Image 1: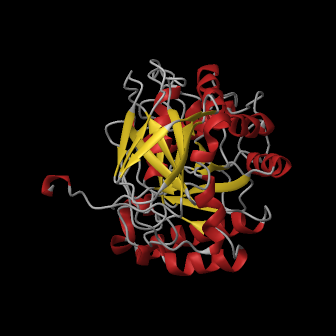
Image 2: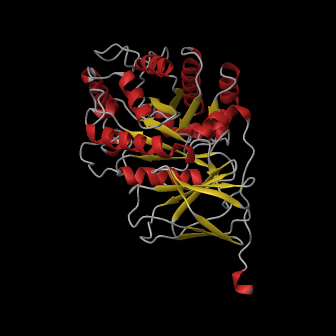
Amino acid sequence: MSFGVKFEVPERLRWWVEARFGMFIHWGLYAIPARGEWVMFFERIPKSEYAKLARRFNPRRFDADEWVTLAKEAGMRYMVLTTRHHDGFCLWDSQVSDFTSVKATPAKRDFIAEYVEACRRAGMRIGFYYSLLDWRWPEYWDGPAKNPEGWARLRDYVHAQVRELMTNYGKIDILWYDGAWPYKAEDWQSERLNAMVRSLQPNIIINNRSGLPEDFETPEQHIRYHERPWESCMTIDESWWGYHAGDRHLKSTLEIVRLLVRCVAGNGNLLLNVGPRADGSIPEAYKRRLRAVGEWLKRNGESIYGAGAAPFRAAHLGHVTAKGNKVYVHVFYWPGKSEICIAGIKNRVTGARMLAADKTLPSEQREDRLFIKGLPKRPPDPIDTVIALELEGEPETTPPSFWTK
């Protein structure tokens, strides 16, 4: 996708596009062994052995209000929680499964209900992750061609659980599917499934992982620009979605902010994942980073929320976002000099302001080149110093022509 390309956004997606930043939470039985959410698969744990983990699942430190408060402190505008991952364990009282937090654990709690209620109290938008596949079903491994009758039972189970989630908890804002692979939308009857979802939740946003495009793309652990709404999902640690005690390589506040800026500069969102411990607590190291991101957003949020791609770039400095008649230059690489140059601006620039210091900066425009002056030797914000430019009209760019002069 080219910088500055815009796409039409349906009205029901507008809040999500403007939000730009959300919290992903992967949490379930896999937090007990603390070796990531795929531990059952990687260690080939038999389902009877894995099921015994439910007897130990009694998260006394789980507090949904604390999770939501942390998301708000981080400047996040929506949350997505795993209702059921590939291991088949449900965090709600599903009527088509006994492998649930209500029936199979000493906790006997509907954690989805508690999460929904906490989000509503705080005015946080609510998202549900749901995996279509379930490793415990032999029919999943057989597939629809080998075992069509068994596959039909699995598919009915999946449809019934999605119906429960869309029926039992009031208005839900996002349905985030996963696990359709290696089968097709026709195998899951995704068109019928999503029609049912939309009949129950007319304003819901659905991702592209049921095998159908639906509302938005979901690049995972990388940023890839698309010419329609998209959201990059990434982990706060190196690679694990569920809590992994051995992964201590966490992204810094600087890395998280810059990932967020890169997403917004390409008209995308960032969904950043944290994996709570088995007791329901979120590690302090995660909290410190997220709160620091929130502090940066308090100073610079106008360059993120409701912003998107700009038609011109400043790759030698960092990235550029835009909103209305304003452009925001995110200076990742502070030059250490009193002047920087932004090129390709067709509009007349009427003002420049440094957000972190709330300071007006002198500038000089020579045709499509803007020289911003009066900069300090050191960056006022070591994470990302943002310079806001006010333009006459919405930003436009000029094609490069310096080699013809």
